[in-house]
Image (cartoon, rainbow, N blue to C red; front, side):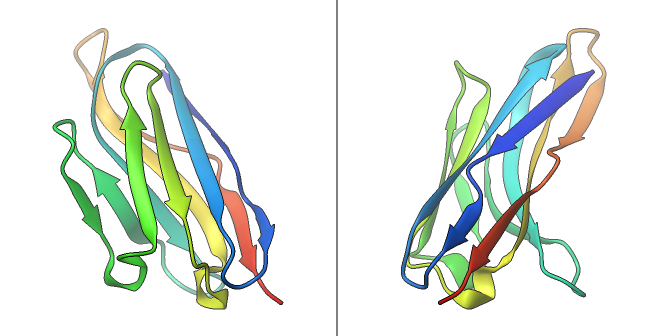
Length: 120
């Protein structure tokens, strides 16, 4: 099994910054894609950003230029640096990590979610 633990959410005023972290543990042989999703009340869960094993990144249009995703392979951790936050960024943020277990089976693990609230 693979477990993810998220941290770093909270309350911030518009224009502020937050940094989310997601650490993976368990029967991990390799990590391929790592990503962050968010879900606002009454809306679907959408991809915010992702980073591939080779380091290439992808961002949703609403966060381009404001958010930065990064990964630390030695720590099995993915980060999301969020700057210039806007009220519309308010949502529950979930990390997602995919790869292979030590038994060569695939896994698709989700974090527990962390609330980000942007308000004045």
